[in-house]
Length: 544
Image (cartoon, rainbow, N blue to C red):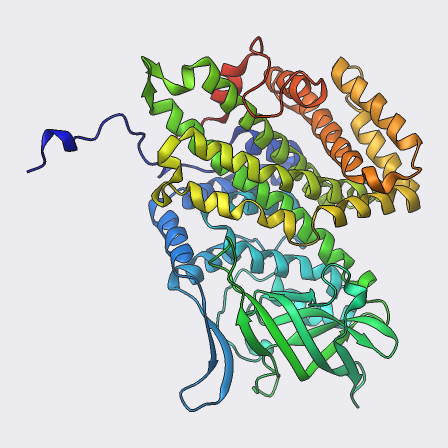
């Protein structure tokens, strides 16, 4: 019989059995805003169903199991034959199957598909971020494949399928397929033009044999991969299947799996090509141009993934503080803690609002929306992903010592939080990409200024920030050294404009004060105390 010292009191109940979608007011409002009336009801019902699934005890347990049982590499079978397979815990397959069936690879062919998928991806990241990698790569492969109509006709139905088939077999025999990516090499990193993997043309037109080593190959258990290699005509994009149509395994030698800080449920590998069969995608020498559509889509997913991680961190912090009592009252009601929670909530809502706006631009597909994406995607990828780590750490601190314990789930969020800032081009790559757009594509800046200008006159701090930004943009001399600062301002002004137009007044007021008006310190919890912070916190509270 437990003694009196073992009584458990003053602990928050687990945040479980709740609607991850319906409890996220900023996300619901963004979906309602961007979905056309004719698909809005179906979209909301679909997302609510996934929200209940994501918040269920069973699915949350799958996330824990997938994280605690990382993949294992099997290079050979019992007889010494190379098989180069990756074994995953059953929870991983369950999560990945749920993600595929929820349409996380099926955005390109349905009305409002990108907004619906973006909201779903943001939610599913909160369960377990690792399975988001193959979902993202598969989704993002479609625009690259569309540069070759024959390849797109063959592969797109498989990639956008809602059927998950984990078996390694010829792609023509599968109802659904997943894609990975292999661009990074040891000597080049983000400088993909320095790649040394060689592509030798074969007798059949459009086919090649690849020889080389990829330092990071994402999702190595996938059915096929888009990779870059040096063909006779220059750097070129190729499709590399794991299994050939005759049923034989392609030469795809997995040398080792990376031992990563976070994202431990997902496999990232070093892979060797040695006469590996590949099919050309696009023209020789046009590899970067061919694959750039895939890169842009995965960068938006990085912002969405970070927005999801931030939302889960904030939800856990607000939930804990709404129940935990200290110094004579609820933590959430204490002025100083309320300031911290409100500050975190602002960061989360701004990230969600921006990411969904960009997803809506994909759905629109118009010339001006495409131009906006050219600047806004790298700016969002740069800023949103960089804000994720400090948000996760501060949210964990809100739980005190409980937040430092694995069972709380907060350490997993903390370990995961830097990932999206590093993958798909780290901060400097994004900032330089913004500079390229500013210098080479006047329509991109025009589209950006039109977007932020929609809120001009609504808040004096936003107006001043736009004016300062225009001053920065007027002088691009020696701009590379201040490219990060400029990219940060572009992201913050766009977030401010969106919140002023669409968020409740207390949210927009606090954001403009703390992020644009300079009326806050460097740490979270330093917003002006005169703001309506209680309403900001209540809006962020998940209702279980």
